[in-house]
Length: 620
Image (cartoon, rainbow, N blue to C red; front, side, top):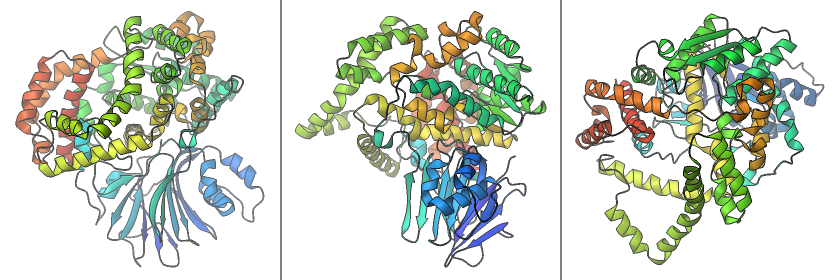
């Protein structure tokens, strides 16, 4: 794999790059396709109405061909199916597409360009303006290397990352490059440019809830999601001891045996902390499923006796700062799978988003005075976590219950009746830490973005706190960023990464499942617990509690961060960009290092090291 392509929409006679692989002409503009690497997997076809560029996998090609019926020309490739579908249905075809893909459609009749990625965004797509025209690619690096594309770093986005605030779904960490959001279309015509969502399981937050009878389809939907992934080549599976990856492995093994295919390879990490090691469960599951297995100690897979240094090294090579510090270990493990013939890697990623109940459900239940279901929610969390019942109850009643119910209306009341109090509060308590944004222009921009962020949150607010939080899985930039990160890292080593729990049809089912039905049997992720309990009765999946890596991660940061900070000589590049005050941040960093490294403090330390290392690599 490791392929790159670029599409250019221009009114110039000649394109910016030489030797285009494909050219489609409209009345006044042309669409060029260039391969940065000659073995590009993108398909480009045209018919009387449109030109289609397709990269990825279309899962429901046969279903679409059946719907289309007889056509004058035979339909073969994925791109040809889509071109024919567009000829029949126009833009109404888009929400019929299922797969992992990036897609460009150039409507030569209307001179309309449509750029979209799959419904959940497992395949990336980015775009940039240049003096030659609009450029589109699955790679940020490809775009920033083109002549005429602005490539300065996005200072405001980097600063907002420190604040945990992401006001713009479209932006990246480069000023001149934007993303097409998951499930969205970038629509370009002679009248202008805009984006709209083409796939949504609950338009405008209105959920058509399923019945208990409908939920019987869960096993079928999971089977189909896994089967779609298995059609794309020999598979490895990241097998932890958790419910999500084990459920994917169990379905994959069953389907491979039914189809007489080679069993997928189980790829497992063994963490050095005994409290979070799942080796016994991992080996037992692989043995019972008859899966060939690769087991690697954590640091052996990383290739070093440290975590942060390999993570920083990986981050420097990416088009955005690394989010997931575990990925050096998992990419090392994936290479072991590749050596054993795997071309795809399946994960349990997405299970936490779609199989679990957000605790913000407690706000809905408190508002509706539904105390019996509130107790059921507490009891389910109590059975599924290692936290005390008192701690969980306190969180449900205040942090996720009363607080979201009370604070927003209280703030609106004060803002309306006593706006001076809001201004005084802002003068007394700065919106930003003292070390952030010493540059006045950047600080003004951050304040403007803060207002934009607040307005967007208010606009997208639903009556149901539960539904509002669920929509974060569709709209939050961190979700898109994480999936783009997976794609880039594994594409660079020649593997396709696939996530059955991000399958659009399965997500649609789980999204519309009433929350307490997700807790089948009174435990978190109850839908998969029952199935796994039947398959592996001696392993206790029906009673398993979620294991957390927070303590191991915090301990690692405490041991490694100080030496790296000294070698960097502080956050010199971020200071030069006006993002941080180097002197103030250095003092804070030293204090954070001496504190007990709990999850939040450890994340702050990592964020400073990560963004400085990444920005320094881009500047060089």
